[in-house]
Length: 246
Image (spheres, rainbow, N blue to C red):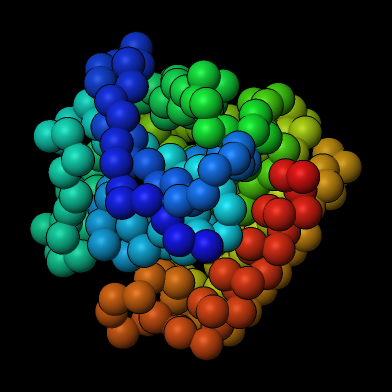
């Protein structure tokens, strides 16, 4: 379906104003909400295209600026060494509680949005995969999709690099779709196994998908992009979200 031009809303959080980019179907009705978490580069063109694709499948998509405390409203980082260094530095500068409060702000926004049906999912890529995983600990979230979620296995998200994501898995009531690249050096097989075992031990409802792909194989810029794999996974994810958010 067609979508409206992208818009935004500035949400209040305990750590400041958070620009949140919005993508909506251009038809009448109420649609499930999807929180789409970006990579460490914030709201780039590839993330905008992912958001538009999801919106076109019948979702209201909200993309929050994950580092809003440290950036201009709507600022994105370049896919270069300087942008990578800045994104990685902020990942462990920001307080873990602030990441969680940001999720709460978007969930609350969906609760007041006239175009949202009240059903909510999270989707995230790279850093965003970890944030989608944590946001799924909120009881309002019915489904979560995590693309090559970084640092869950290391417990290193946030200031102090001592997150509790693995320990809090029993809080997740949502069904998860976990997607990984076998050639991704950021989440080696031992790390993936640790996450799989923790989800299994907690009796979490999840599906697990590993593909021959490098880190960032979904991003449609750069040499690691795999168009055929990305296309098949978008179809799989949209079907999963449609089923879970009925």
